[in-house]
Structures are given as C-alpha cells and as structure tokens.
Image (cartoon, rainbow, N blue to C red; front, top):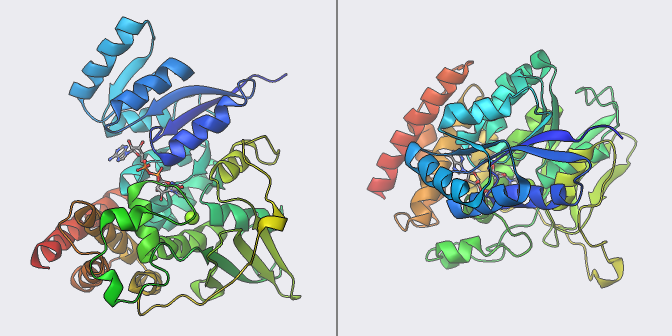
Length: 394
Ligand code: NAD
Ligand code: MG
C-alpha cells in the first residue's frame, strides 16, 4: 500500500475544518495530518492536536502559541507551535504536505491558499474568497505552480462532478451551454423586505439546510454567498458570467447542474452534508466513505425551483455588477461584505444595511487593474476602511 498523504488543514477548528478531520479520521491508512491551524479557538485545536498528532500547529499570535505550548507539554503531545500569517504560508508549503485544505474564512485565507498553489500542492478549496479577491492571479498561480485545484464548495463540487472528466476550461469545446448554481434561498427566502428589517444574527445564522460558520451563514441569508459563488464559478470553470444562472432550490438536494448544448442537464445530488464534497476533493478521482447517509428518494416530497428575487436580495446583483466591472471590483465587494457582516454579527449594523454598505463601498472605491497579491490586499484594506465609515454612518 502507498504511504499516507500528508495533509495541512488551514482553518481546522471551523465548520469545514472539523468536517474535514471527521472524513480524515475514517481513513488513517490514506491520510496523515501534518499541520492544523486555528485563529482563536485554542481548546478545540488542543483537542484536535491530541487526536491527530500533527507535526505543526499554527495560531494567531505569540500569546496563544505560548499558552498552547504549555498545555501540550503537560499532556505529552509533541508538535511545533507557530504563529501569525507567515506560519500559515509555511505549513501550506512544507515538502511533506501533499494536499492543503483551504478552510480559513474570508480574504485572510488568500495568502496561504495562493502559496499552496505556487508550491504545486493539491488544493482543496473551501475558501471561496480567495477566488473572489484574486481569481485571475490564483488561477495563473495554479497553472504556473503545477497545482491541482479541487473545489470543496458544494455547488462547485457538483459542477466539477457534472463536467467531462477531461474538461480543460473551454465550455464551447465541451458543448456546455450554461452552468446552473442552485441556492437554498437561506432562512429569509419567503420574508418580505419589511420582515427582514429587524432580524437578528441568531435568525440569520439559523440556516434551514446547512450547518456552517457564522459569516457564510449570514452570506447565505443575504444571497451574497451565491454572488461570491458566481464569481468563484467564473474563475474555476472559465465560464462567462452571462452563462452562469442561479436557481433557488429550497430543498438543497440538487447541488448544481451543467446544461449541455444537446439539451442534456447533468446534476449532482446528495444530502446537504459538507463531508460529501470534502471527501470527493480529498480522494478524487476515487470515492471514499464520508460518513454520509444515502439520499432517501422516497422521503423527498418535492424538488422545486424559483428565480432569485434581486429586489429583496440585492447582494446577488452586486456580485454580478462587480464581475462586469472587472479588475479588482470583486475584491472591493468582498472586503465591504466582510466588514458589513462582521458589523451585523456585532450588533452594529442592521441586516438590510449589509447590501447598502457594499453598494456604497463599490461606488466609493473605484476599481483598478490590480494584478499582484500586494495590490489586491491593499485594495481589500482600503475597501474595508471605506465600508467601516459607511457602517458608522448607518
Ligand atoms: P468558520 O468560521 O466555521 O471557520 C473558520 C476557520 O478559519 C476557523 O478555524 C478559524 O479559526 C479560522 N480563521 C478565522 N479567521 C482567521 C484569520 N484571520 N487567520 C487565520 N485563520 C482564521 O468558517 P467555515 O464555515 O468553516 O468556512 C470556511 C470557508 O469555507 C469560508 O470561506 C466559507 O465560505 C467556505 N465554505 C464553508 C462551507 C460550510 O459548510 N461551512 C461551505 C462551503 C464553503
Ligand atoms: Mg456553497
């Protein structure tokens, strides 16, 4: 038997990170955890370190690193504890690492995911913000580094599985007419604009079908998540935005579809459980046990589809606008959204003002042709500052 693959899990303590470790734990003969990273959840990271015995652990700052080191020493677990953004890059590019799960939330996940691309790793990409902020740069780095990029976002995993196995980024050559991203519609799908005025972070994070981190849960409630996914799909599959459609499908059974020129539609179906796309990316082209129940067709009452309502959910329209503007406009959209969502989760901004802050930031921070990581991160910082000003004015 071949030796186990070395894996780094960036964002190990999050929702995707924990699901990844759940899948990995089912296959000790296939995978060996080399590094785990977390920002602030030291208790969870400590438990994971005891269970998976990685060589490296990464936390946010020196104080957290010292605290974690002390706990590890008293429990006999040997691991090197590093801290800060440079350490994320270090563990994403170690020679003994074959695959990197990029599951940090937000543009904070970009530098380490990009470093993994440049180092030619197999990248399991959950961090959609990497492609939203730096789509062209990221895809160029994947090609130049000889990396393999596998989507973890459930919709993109579904599209990836529905494309021809030899798809080389040319939709016409593969007879593709459209890509259809499905969206659950989130917890406020049937609420009026008036009814959304006073929703709380707890309401917004109560997703009907998926259990996820708080930021993506709010994004799902505003439909910004679908907007970010449209941008992600544009880069992953090299399809023009005009060929990407969004269909609200409240049951979250069909995870997305590819429509071909001959009228065929190929879709991927499954229970809404992230362990399926995670296992798919980990083992591709093989299939492994993920701990997910089989879909029970006889308990499905209905599969329905609606057009998204861009009046009530303007964030989806703003994402298409950012793609049309081009350059670093998607980075501005993303930074403004991260700032607005954080303010909403802190109780400093109303839910309905998230879209307003994003729109005002896109109008106030002009797009440019940023094509380096430094320029894109500078734009991200500028847009965040601008958005914070708009939050304060709301
Ligand atoms: P989460 O909030 O549950 O976890 C985020 C992880 O990132 C944690 O480990 C946290 O410690 C770490 N982190 C946060 N800020 C950081 C920083 N500044 N520097 C370093 N590490 C930091 O998030 P999640 O729901 O697991 O989502 C992770 C990513 O996966 C997001 O980009 C999200 O859009 C994407 N995604 C998530 C799901 C899901 O089901 N949760 C589905 C599809 C895509
Ligand atoms: Mg998704």
